Length: 144
Figure (cartoon, rainbow, N blue to C red):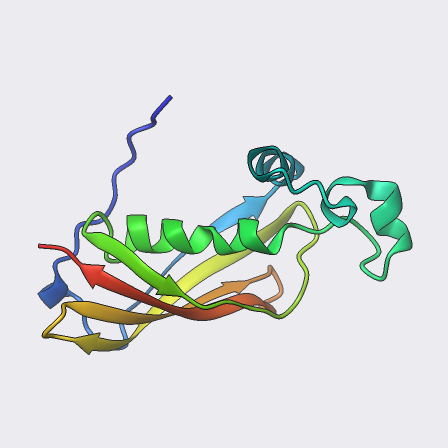
């Protein structure tokens, strides 16, 4: 069932270089298992506690792409919000995230290209201790 959520509605001219925005989310075991079911990625590092305990990770970890998908929430709901047309995203996976940890998902406007109404946005996910888990650069067109 579609759940109507209110997204921000920034126009291109409302957004400025250096502007930042963020939200927090707890990454639960249910999130990880729902993502595994949705994608078919049941890698034992994510889904099998016994296997993960014996690995160098020491316990189950969240899928990197589950975490990265939160950048879609950042851009589609926070900035620019409903005028967002997500064009590209590069990703750098720095550290694993154990289950049931709070993350901060944040973005910062690096550049604007007025002729295209395009934004370049630094995207970062931090764990509850401030360690970078995933980062990258997104390019977004702001629709009229």
